Image 1 (cartoon, rainbow, N blue to C red):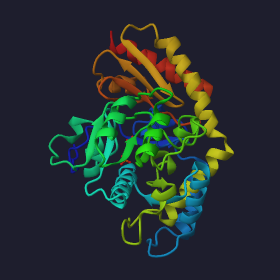
Image 2 (image 1 turned 180 degrees about the vertical axis):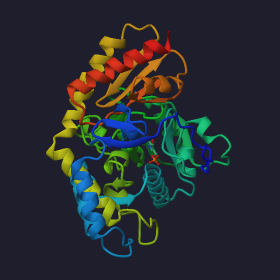
Image 3 (image 1 turned 120 degrees about the vertical axis):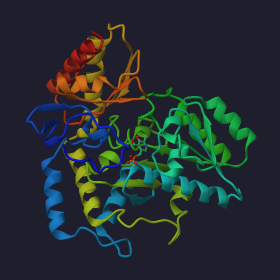
Length: 392
Ligand SMILES: Cc1ncc(COP(=O)(O)O)c(C=O)c1O
């Protein structure tokens, strides 16, 4: 047995993958698995998409890294494209979701200070997940994730998710609030979808109280819900800041903090940065991801495939008394069971299906957008078999 030199912050299930193609992964024994998790919402185009592999190969031969001391053409092009597609004005590039949110939090503080607030605060939600750096961990709701890392970063006020009234009350009583930060659909928090009016009501409150409206679309963005960003399901809704990562690079680390209006101009030279962020390699790959999403019309497909998969799951699991809820939007789906169920993952392996469990009781599916109807059917069939076996 090989000695394990890794720190013990992960507890992986017993499988090692050697190869991937489309929606399939092969383990080191040659077994083939249907991937309904896509590297936790990352591999939207599937594994080793030929267009992405081609760009990776070509760009690796051309230029990988220069630093942000110089202009980077691919970065400028990607920023322009993302802004055109999102209605935002400017982009900051970094390498992970947490870093993109960290940038958003720093922008909120700058905004607060520009309003004369000495100690600006941000309203964040229960059920939220924003990352593992100290500021994003402090913004995250999970007490389990925070345990042992105190003191947390100050300046976050937590309110229930999907509750506009409490936000209104907090804003009315505290003039130090500089921003509201929220996931349009919670990811790690258990795939909760708020009421239709929720996001627009928060936007209105931000306008009334001169706060920045920050949407964390690290997980639900990049087309997963059937629009590039989930807020685009509301034609007149724009955040001041939206963060994105995961599927933006289809596996190559890249993230972006996009902003509009005043928020887009708050950073000054020297006020924020990243050595790797937005390098010629990662930004070229992200450009290819966006082009491929468009060319293969994968964003509307993610929406349609999600509707199909939800219906299949309702048909095949809806009658099961252990299934408390099946919910989702596009290809972001949660199946809530009646007990904590992390141990179901190994049964999933036996049935050659990959998914995750989040929030203890919620099976989460985040499949690649390229899944065919037949493969969606396979996901539902295999998951039904997994759940049946789990409760035997
Ligand atoms: C909504 C949301 N925000 C932020 C993050 C953190 O992203 P990363 O792990 O890339 O730092 C995640 C990761 O799961 C997420 O789902």
